[in-house]
Length: 437
Image 1 (cartoon, rainbow, N blue to C red):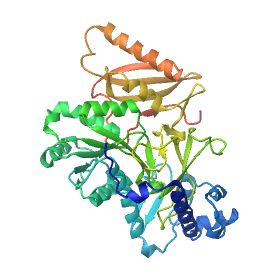
Image 2 (cartoon, rainbow, N blue to C red; image 1 turned 180 degrees about the vertical axis):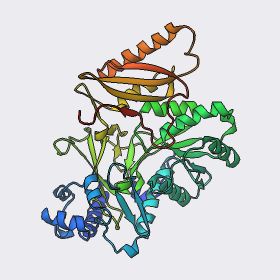
Image 3 (cartoon, rainbow, N blue to C red; image 1 turned 120 degrees about the vertical axis):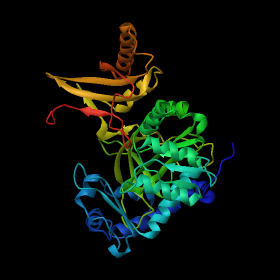
Image 4 (cartoon, one colour; image 1 turned 45 degrees about the vertical axis):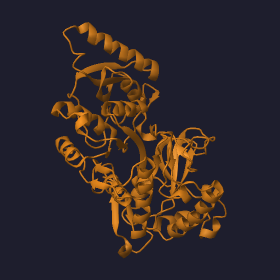
């Protein structure tokens, strides 16, 4: 296979050259950080009162961690390092659980971010001949405008369709010959189901690739989407605190997500001890942004669980690769004392061909114990007058889940289309337990 590079010199730079670049950019990031109300105090308390205190990359560990709580406490301008008159855009979280986290950009920040997204898209084999339909939410959410700008930078025809309205999505795909889409994995599964309802056949579409992100999902879900839609699906990773999409991306090898280390320094820590994990071990991803002046963020605890692959990638890129994001530390469920991630249930569900594309995890309290119920849709062929077929499938799902998660769940089978549909980030867990338990 022939691999293409958007920025060949930087994507294949030697490790020594890359680390020298990172050290220079880290000093720049510290310089900007010292101009913010938050870091001026935090860094000086750590004995870092100037960029010159950063002698080597190992000095990064002298910098305290930054958390989402810190960003909320600093709302609205506690992390702004430049005059407000130089800011040209902001993005923010919804703030549904507290003050929103707000990130500011100047013109140069946006150019750098766009370059990383363009590099990511190009690494999957896309080029200016592609028609790119961006089926993700626009607005304060970074995924819409981030991918939009990256696609335009490459020269793709970009259709800013936004999320939802599958009937209109199909019309745009057919009218303009869409070859590449960007959506959440849950919406891509929903698209396949709606195709059957609306009589849209695969032959009517020119789709060949999809970028899936914004929510954790399993490898079995990726394979199911690829089989159902007959396309290549690429994992993407980003978060608004680090600009948005374009932090890490799969190349055509699909063997881990390349963290663009000329823009971000990644660390993997034990989320309990906060110490680095052994090389290649799993843990919480911590990121430092090297490519943004307006809102510098150092050693940000993402809460995302991942790890670094050992060894080089066949594509020739020298930037380290992240494992697929397993989930978030704050997504973990504790069921009768057992730690469980929703992705573990998804892996089982999506590996069974009889099971549909949609599912819901419900946790309730029954007396002193927790009760886990897995609701999943199944195809019409399963819903027959013979209850033995349904009961046999329920029992097989239950036993397979119990073997995987060590918890004995209740399993409910639902007709296709009966569970809630999510056009944005899917909400797979409904925890009904009292909040004080």
